Length: 444
Image 1: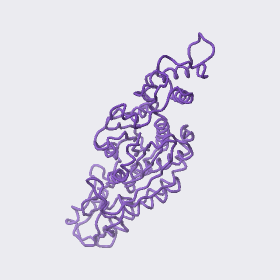
Image 2 (image 1 turned 60 degrees about the vertical axis):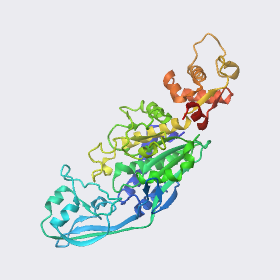
Image 3 (image 1 turned 135 degrees about the vertical axis):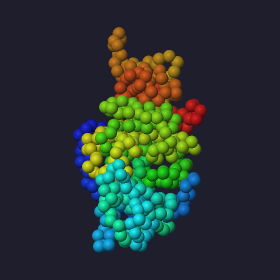
Image 4 (image 1 turned 180 degrees about the vertical axis):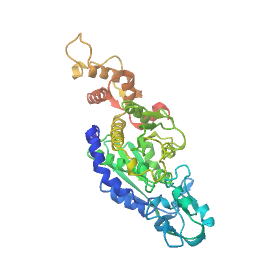
């Protein structure tokens, strides 16, 4: 599965192919709603087919509701000569995201409380939002802020905040089973490259690659705004959650930091074990415990759902200097790191897709593998890797160990364990345990 992404040349070629997509998406002013999101989906549609969902303003999603839709045409602060000293057209971060419409004239003293800058990073524009409180403001480099002269300034935000829709999109790849896997990435950030154009592009590429395969699980790649998007998706898809076997939240995939997996809330799910297995082969990769702060994994893992969803990033949110500033641009993205992230994610999805619990249908004693063509015909030899893997699968297939656990305990390569499990099932010696039966056995 995903053979083109599982080798370094394949991943590197994919990065080269999507770089124009990253360049096209970067200037767009996205938010949790609005036409910037739709324009972004237009571009992603060229990589993977997307089904879009328009959710009306006021739609309730648990303790939240979809806010008014926000769109912006222009915004600026001009000095007395008419020169734009802060200009949305120069960079979308210059306006506080979701700012209400404004057209006024203010003194510098009156304007200052509406300005946001970073004295510690004077050459970077910060990213600020006001999603759920009607307000407005501008962001600018601190060096530029210090140059503002006393006087009267023209202040214009040509935006619209009105009833509309929240837009999210899905690419669904039907598998051989109706059990589900999900990959969620947020679509709401404006001109920020690592956070999260890399997640959007990676999700589209992985969906495209998976469509050419015949996965075991049915995979859903979901593109939606942070927090409100995942809550809306969950509220509209509760009926399929009992079939959700695994999931990942992905983003921040191209910075120089180490590849990082954040465990699910439970910390011991098949998703967690598979991620640790895959990351073991990645130089310097790390695994972190769950905490109820971060991206949308905290929604999927909230106590009412407690789903087996972890997160894959490089540097996590807030852990690289350029985070949520204009310095998170395309120059921050390292192609080799993005390629490494794609390759690891492809491998992880492969393992998640094939990982399963199995039940030994001939558990009393060791079944005769030789008569089924699963064991060498010459005795007295040490069993080979496949024979060892088959014996381990049979020994551990009591319904309480998945294939990743068997590979870890036996120290036999995953590919051999997977081949053994598939051939044993083909001869009728084992069967796959479905998710519902697995829950009953484990008391979930």
